[in-house]
Length: 280
Image (cartoon, rainbow, N blue to C red; front, side, top):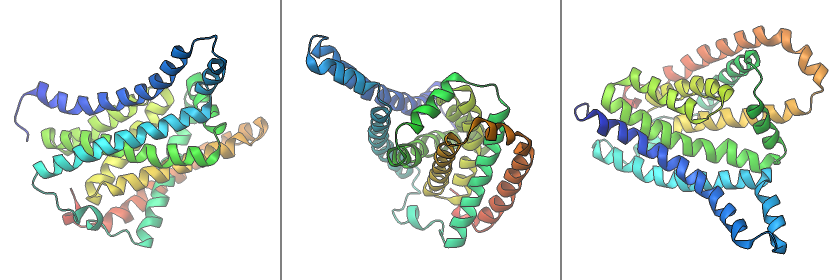
């Protein structure tokens, strides 16, 4: 699959991303269109306008768009696997043995990645957009946020960025270029300076997980653990007084070192449990 027109290859990487953004945009457009049709004189206009600005509704729309796009990308992912003539229904669930020790190692590997990215974010300049996003998440309630951001979002994003963009890039140019391309696109797609850095680092870890785990479920689970931990951390930090947050600054370096140790040690333990036959 490494032969062929470069434009055709780029298009095969680009169109799933366009579909992803179009569906996200359409979920907001549907609500906005409903408001415009009502007109400002309609009693329901003010209610719907306020509802569209509600963080809870934004989280709901995010969940809906994630479900729709995940379904579409899942079908495309299966089609791609059939074209590679390597797809077997049982492989998806059995290519990697998710034992209890493996899940624990994956969790600690994920915690290490979160600690590293948290420290990097702390050293970056403050971002109003990032602060607004954090405030929106906190004001939406724990359960909806855990469902939309912690579970549905990662499932959708893994099918897109690892299942399609990484796999297709790997078919075209090999593993290393595919890791860098999929991670860069994953970071840029978050469209926020702080999140871009965080997502790029996470994207590399997830691509490595997929390459060595042999199943899309592996990076999905790590991504779910990562996002759920980040959501939990956001809620915990929101309850801390400003003085306590400032007093935590001296601990950033030890936190970063701990993150590196966790990532390296437990990453190695996870990948050591996989065999070459498990690789995609």
